[in-house]
Structures are given as C-alpha cells and as structure tokens.
Image 1 (tube, one colour):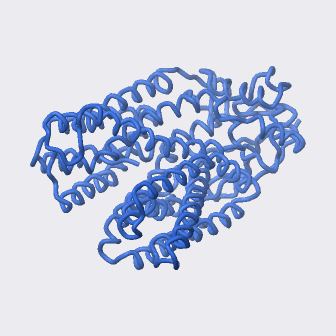
Image 2 (tube, rainbow, N blue to C red; image 1 turned 120 degrees about the horizontal axis):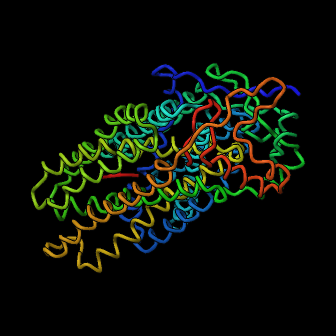
Length: 523
C-alpha cells in the first residue's frame, strides 16, 4: 500500500507575505460603517423615513442577513472545492454588488417616495447579502491555509489591522468630502483589495487518495474535500489527505453539522460571551460620552480615534504573545487585561475626558487580542478536525451569524436593563447616570471574565499529548487525526461525530507531530 504524503506546515512567511490577503479587510470594514452606523440617521433625516418604518425595515433585513450566513458558508465551501479561482470570481461579483447597492442607498432619489423606498429596501438586501458572502469567503480562505499558531495569528492580524484603517477612514471621510467621493474611494479600495487577494497564498485544491479513502471511510468526495490538500502555493508542498467516494457526498453533506463538534461548540460559547461583553459598550458608548462625561462631538471623535488607533498599535504585541504563550492563553490574558483597563470607567464622571482618553488608549491596546485571535483559534479548531475540512465555510457562516447575534443580544440586554434601572437618555438624574456607568463598565466586565473562565476550562486547562509521528513507517498509511475503527464503518453523521470527538481527545496530535490542544468593538 502506497504511503500517504502528509501536509507540512510552511515555515513562517516573510513579514509582508500576508499583506495581499489582509488588505481586503480594509474595504470589508469600510462597508460596515455606512451599513450599520450611517444608514439609520440617513434614512430618518435625509430620506424622511419615520423611525418606525426605518427600524422595521432594518430589523427585517438584518435578521434575514444573519440567518442566511450558514447557507452562504455552504456555498463558499462548494466554490472553494471547485477551485480558488471560482471563489475569487464570485467574490468579485459580490464586491461590485456591494458598491452598487451603497450607491443606490446614499445616491439621489429614484422618483416617487414609494419607488425610492423599494429601491432602498432592495439595495439593503443586496448590500447585506453580498457583504456577508464576501466576508465569509475571505475568512474561509484564510482558515483553509495550513499555518502554525503564530503564523495563523499573523495572517488574521493583517486582516484586522487593515480593517481598523478602514474603520478610521470610513468614520471621517463622509463628513469631509461627502458621500459621492466616499463611495468612489470605497469602490477603489474594494477593487484594490480584491486584486491583492488574487495574489495571496491559495488554499489547497483537491486530489483523491484511494488508499487513504479505504483506511478512513470518511464520507466526503474528492471534488469537495479540502482535507485532500494538494497545495498550490509556493509556501506549501504537495500533499494528500483521505477522501471517500463521490456517491457518499450528498449523505455526508446533509449529515454534517458543526454543532456535533464539541470543540466548536465550546469555542462558540467563549466567542458569544466575549462578543456580548464587547458589544454592550459599543451600544452604549455614545450615551456614556454624552450624558456621563459631557463630551462634545469633537471629543467623541477624538476618543474613538484614540481607541481604534491603539488597537492597531497593539496587534504586534499580541502576535508576540502568541509566540510565547500560544493562542488560548494569549487571548485569555487579553480578556483579563481588558477588564482591568476598562473597570476605571465606573469611577469617571462629568468632565473626566482626559481620564477616559487614557482608558480608551489602554483598552484599545487589548482590543487587538479580540480582533485577531478568535478567528485564528477557529482556524486551528477546524484544522485539527478532519471532518470539518470540507466544511470550513459552513463553520465560518455560523461564526458570522454569532457575530451579528452578539450585537443584537447586547442591545436587547443592556437597553431594557437601563430602563429598569431608571436611566433616560439626556437625563442628568444621578441614579440614572450611575445605572449607565454600571451597564457600560460593570456588565461587560462580568461577561468577559465569564468568557475568560470558560476559555481556561475548555482550551487551556485540558491536557494534550502527541501519539503519532508526522510520518508513518514504510508500508503504512499515515492519516492525521483519523477516527477510531468504530467510526470507519459508521453512518456519515456518526463518522463525523466520532472524528470530531477523537480529534479533541487528549491523545490528538496535529500534522506536525506536536500536541494539539482541545479545542465589533468599542470602548
């Protein structure tokens, strides 16, 4: 029996090697501000929509946008399984659709109010769907690249660093030059980001290995399984992994569920808790700066700029932390330091603007951990579980849904609590302002500490040890993280669950022979 060649993780790339992939993060973050920040006042003040109409339309569109993310993830898997070129082609169409939709949203009126309302609603659906597809495709591409922990963190740090630049540009450009020029700049950034993406390292294409197929019985077809990696990038050598017959694919696809994978469920729990902790201050920051601190509009812009600029400056520090402590521990340290830095806001009152600027700078430094490390840890989880290799887009789709759910849950949790505690926007009532401080700083701190505790219990404390060398002896087929024998003859759903459970066990090892551990923010 011919031995199977295992993929070797590439050496750490040059400092700028991940820039072509990461630069697409700038237009992706640029788009988020018009869609989520500028659009509600634009509908109400510029277009004259009632608050009830604007709120109802936005709610319906955003619920639809979130619910279709897993389906977009499945489509991304199929496109990437055909070839990276197919995914890039669809991404180009999606990027053009986003730009055209934003021109329709912020451009001139389209005739009668009814006709313009229909155009705006359709443009909202188009912009949200295309932007979600673009973001899921981009993250899935990065998750499919074979990397070590520090290299994977560096990859996503490039994306998030470029995204921070996009946020800063999008926050000031409309006020300086108007929406016409702003959208032209966005179109240029989208085109340049896509062109850079086409020059980035490519995920693996597909190759069938009949011997490994008989050895594992994993029910995934050669044409769609990213686990059968034959690397096309200069950074990775040729490699093959196990696949099954094409006839087994439909049943496997229907049976595959990310929620059957325990490490993914645990990581999602940490991600949601930590995401709500970050989304609550994002929901309340304007109210806190206006009512509690008495900050003017210019001060508010300066404070937010300080926060995001500090986050960009802090990213290299967290990459060094990953090299020293690993992904989970570094993320946990970032959570604890964020709580320490942000807790000082509970002591601030009217006029304490310079003190809050210091809090923005310090808490901004910790934001880099929340930006780059969760996506890198998700990619590590997927890389460690063969059953997930052909479904990375599906996992990323659920991840994107959770990101949007975090914002919704934050608003649904914080705003009603503030009302119950006696706070009213614009009020100077001391009891109401104390409630605002408690909701702004205390509640996020409790949730973030709970997320850190869950991260410790599920990804840091659990021991792991290698059991298999990266290359099997001659005459044997080496299969990384292969499921136990009982899973090789099971149904596709059972095989998926068994493979996921086995890879999470303390005996699991990655393809390098090293032990594999189980596995939108504002101040």
